[in-house]
Length: 281
Length: 291
Image (cartoon, rainbow over all chains, first blue to last red; front, side, top):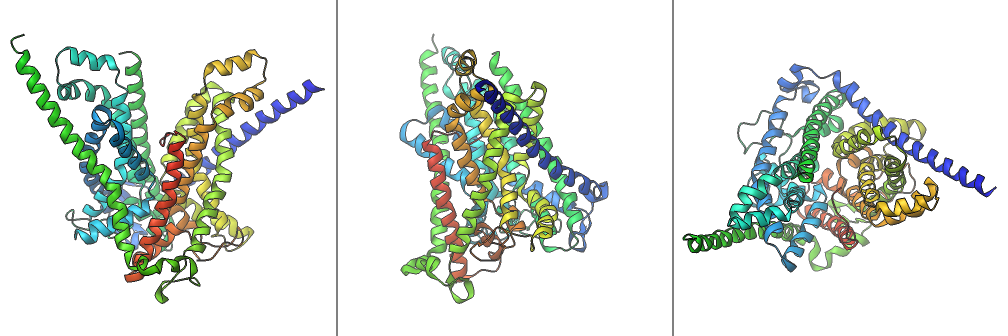
């Protein structure tokens, strides 16, 4: 009798676990399937190369893609040097309470809701620094958002370089600066790049922080001081403010997801390569 | 050997220079948080000063043009939506993590993890779009108006599920193999191993994953904004349209001025406060904030 109830419990748990996973995967396939099916109907080379017409219902998304890339470029130009320097400082130099404070503030920054970064960016870049609604403002706001994730992943990559490599470099008489440049950074490069890809993915997906910083204008931007509409903002605007914009919204969503998929795959394969290198130094 | 003296001194100089450079840049990053907090405080000072903050809890409602800024209904809506989402996502996420660690055929594990990672990266605005065009009409067919607290809960649950699943899986993977082997050697069934050994040992990791998911749910703007209906009211039932704090900022920022704008910045402060408490809890548990 006891044995039987035990067996029954085992079967029950197996069923529950299978069902829960099937439910989760099923709902997600439903979502992805909808995006692909509705998006493919809209997708064409014209869609990628034309300007939006009729508030985005017709035409394409060319200026929006350009704005998105420009915003990303501005964000990366700030994030990479600043984030890399902080990661190096954290993994190579920081000790004691300063490191702890820095880590804690990074943890809090990573959790700050994106809309709050939007408020911050609006108050600082658009108004206090007089940049207005512009690609500059949007990119700089995104940089603030990306920094914590990039720093933490880059630091993890640097810290994972084994102590033998460090002692080897020291034994050769390399300064720490030279060891960093010739040994640590190259060894950690795949991990740092993977962290960068993750951050780019986060930035591309961002909407709330951009509405009040880079704005809504869907014309082709002429300079970085122009307002530019990011792809995610375009999807939001089409689905909420433009009746009959759903088809174009799904088309843009598919483009965005394909972009993210490419970046995601790059990040995964890079970090796997990194792990393999680590195992066999 | 002739160069050794020269070498060591230049080494020291380069190192000191590098330490100072990276240190000052790191300090700038640390100051970013202070800057965010100070700026939010400065922008909301107009309404916070002189005891004006009591209006956030004691006004008759949210009527910014009349200077009434009661945040409570939106705070309740935020908490209800996040809590509901967590109640759905936590069991499902943990179960799917258990599946991929203990039940899945080995060929299924990697694709499953890839799918979860992809889903964790899908933009919230895409979840919102799908919710608006698929989920809301479905709920409307059952109980109008469709755009409701329930829609917000379901979409948020879907959004944070990958976070829960990935962190739980990492926590389960970190359980010492010796414990699992020992349990198996004692003749425990798979259920006994999962419920009696693996899950209790992974509890801390699963908890910090849940806190991380809660932070994401509380801070989410677009997906909720698109499906929740955005009526300012204390949620009375699952089918009531509600407006959360983040959505309120996104909706009104474009035309807010004066005290109204200050009140929106103050609600940003409130959101940050809640998230900081959760981050602190997660940090105290020694949890890793990134899956």
